[in-house]
Length: 184
Image (cartoon, helix red, strand yellow):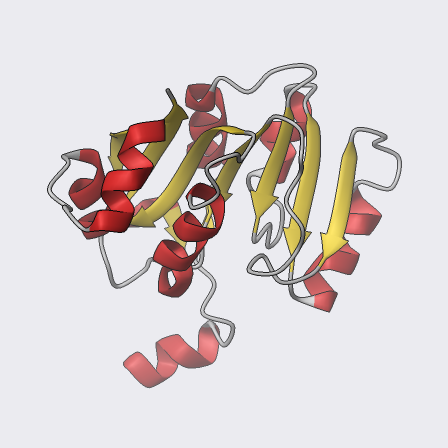
């Protein structure tokens, strides 16, 4: 069975279904004029509802194939820009921005570090789909590592919700949730 699952999902992507993606964007409070990053944009599950808010959307995708698909889809949308690149290394904005992303689970903590380590970061809010254990650990303040304590001085963390397996195609093998990170 797991071999079949891998064959159907060779990239390891777990794509959000449109209804859940729209709900995550609604909860994020993203609106007209906001600069928002969709990190690991994939097929654009979050990019589409973000674009409908009137925000300026920067969709970052590592896969050339998926990035080209997004570029074609948003070719006429002046407020959506697609960047083909690795979210671990693409330069982050130097002006206030938000993030709404379904992060690759294997690099979720790495990406949190990238977003939160810089004391002068202009990040205002991030709504992130992450493994449930990470959302709970950060949302309930049970992670006492020095790095996380530094983050807590600048940001509030809370768990928005747990996501059902049916929120993804294909369903992931780990429980997931939405972690909100808000600048103090």
